[in-house]
Image (cartoon, rainbow, N blue to C red; front, side):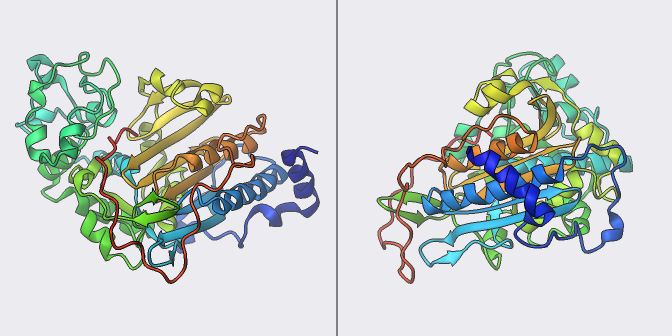
Length: 438
């Protein structure tokens, strides 16, 4: 009997209690802030239960193969945490386990916090989506004067500024300061006019930090903390390397070295573009963020804000072909404001991924069903990235495909770390940082 069919039968017998390893947790301690979602579609309870049971088995197989150093993941359904799971090590050298409170670097998942803050400031009247960059930050220049004068806040946050993909990321990785790079944008030939094509950016995107300071008189990271982290109860969320390393539990980045995972020091580079890649957060933090993005915290992000943030903008056809699951499942792809908008198996999926050396992150949800998944891991291996589309397929009752390769009899990628032993004193030399393209 096929694995997935068996799980569906099991779920039908045992009912909803299989839907989570622990009782579903409320969206937020202040449950009065949550609101029902009238008119949204319900997924069959048995299908959700079967999906979560399958997800646990896939994660167990991932863990048995030691395919990641450490990982934290959750599934949220209707403003409740229906599934929460951690595995592996925050620090393999010391044998420190990942917990739901362990803090990870979010990499490009940070972008949605920048756009969320922008939406709040727009609602406050302190900013407009069509605010011209030159009006807020006079040092901003592109090679074309008409494009310089035309570029808006929405253009940089919607990845349609006209610059070639990942402009100056290579120089950021070589420790050239952000302040120098952003002032050299006028040296770059544009791929198209402002607003006319997609080109993923980290440097130009981070101009929103300068705009926020100019329009509010307060630092960008403090505004995010006041307007998003604090009201959502994201107790472990922060910006910057110092804050990461000050966390009570934080996930070190790891490399596969021989038959072990070896931790190494986080790199500073992408922390210098804080709006694009500077957030640190735990799984518990990201559960609250996922709930808010699905409409469960209208006191922080209103339905009007979310509609604007998630509205498809510039087309991103390259996303249709970048991985096997995207080739098979996606029929349309756009960039919104800090989010990707996919048509996945005929349903709208709001999604983003992130990658910076030693960390990978993914988040995605179906607005129609108010169900979403977030996954954080602290090693470079791509295997976990196939698990999320497997969960999506099961939730939508699409044909089962082992996108992560966890159902085969592949050998373990590395040996399990030995407890109570430190990592080798001589660590492998760091490779050049992977370009941050997510």
